[in-house]
Amino acid sequence: MSQNYYQKEIETMPLEEMRKLQSEKLVKQVKHVYENVPYYRNLMDEKGVTPEDIKGIEDLHKLPFLTKADLRDAYPYGLLAKPLDECVRIQSTSGTTGRRVVAFYTQHDVDLWEDCCARAITAVGGTKKDVCQVAYGYGLFTGGPGLNGGSHKVGCLTLPMSSGNTERQIQFMTDLNATILCCTPSYAAYIGETLKEQGYKPEDIPLKAGIFGAEPWTEEMRRGIEKTLGIKAYDIYGLTETSGPRVAFECEEQTGMHINEDHFYAEIIDPETGEVLPEGSKGELVFTSLDKEAFPLLRYRTRDICVLSRKKCSCGRTLIKMAKPMGRTDDMLIIRGVNVFPSQIETVLLNEGYEPNYQIIVDRVNNNDTFDVNVEMTPDKFTDKVSEIIAMEKSLAGAMKTMLGINPAVHLVAPKSIARSEGKAVRVIDKRKLI
Ligand code: ADP
Ligand code: ZN
Image 1 (spheres, rainbow, N blue to C red):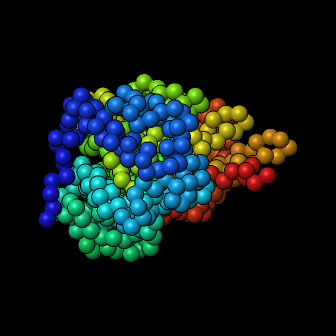
Image 2: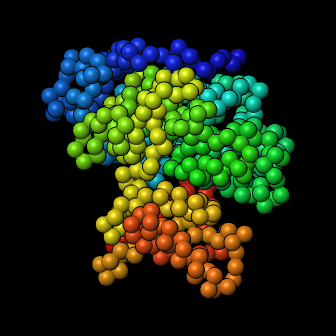
Image 3: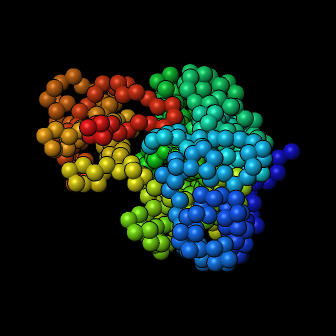
């Protein structure tokens, strides 16, 4: 039986009450970790902090940070807080930025995870009347299993498609009238592009909403997907270490994602000094999982750059919101001394009427960084006149220079010549790392 996953008493809870709830959970969680995870106990001992020092959220800053390096160090069982025979599931990162890490779940953890995904589906208007097509990868990646579980809890008719096989995605979507699509934004854009090529107009597509996350995407890309598919496109955020897509979800206002604060406490820190920054500052997002049993990370540094806001939301939820992460600290390229995020390039492309099909190639020649951006020509801009192509490349490079402060070499390439992604898109090839 499906229950209502708009959990009003939690989602609209006054801040003071939420702090109380979080504090109670934190005190218990710190004890649990200290007693069961020698790796973290050592970090606490080194810092001279005991569980008794943590009386509530106000004491959180006393705890040591955990980083991805710690997770790799402690691989595979070093951060496990429950006996293995109480665990029922393992999930793993996609390995976008290095060696995979694994995370463990008890049945209770899986339940809470799915509850949060059900909250996200409910927030975009999903009910038991919906047909939910889950085109995130299934398996070790958290996207597929997470949204699948959430969709079941809401009572949607679930299409467990996994990613890939775009023809079949489209066939099932149209034959079975899928109303909600869940996948990465780059795959949603690809599905949209394919539907358009097959002659589908937005009004012929049964979808009404999409839940897209697991990689950075821009507002411009959101508008593009909404237009092609004729839907509302919502963001969702999470990482394997915190149980995947259960950390934050977007509501109808579409201005950032509400964090499930009853399960995760978020901080923004200065990535250089580790200092906690006030609400509204841009910095690195740090999460403490307040009630995960098997893999309860405290003060985990996500490396995602982001801003938090407690501005009143028109949906009535009081849960704090996180802006779209603008990239990871390790996503940021430093080219000729200038910070460049792929999302900035994407914004320029979409503003200039191109599709988000691009690749950034950075290399070092004679101690100088080279910076090339391959961009696909769109069918409506297509020309084989060399002078026109050069003029278009120049104009795009100019727009990028204005955004970034440095000049890339832009190359327009044939439509469809850049590999499409069915999962997370590969936007950057940094050849400098190979040297
Ligand atoms: P990997 O680190 O191997 O990619 P994950 O699949 O756990 O493994 O990816 C989590 C990361 O994906 C997050 O830390 C974040 O950088 C990115 N991410 C997830 N959701 C979003 C989103 N909605 N917007 C931007 N980035 C996101
Ligand atoms: Zn809201």
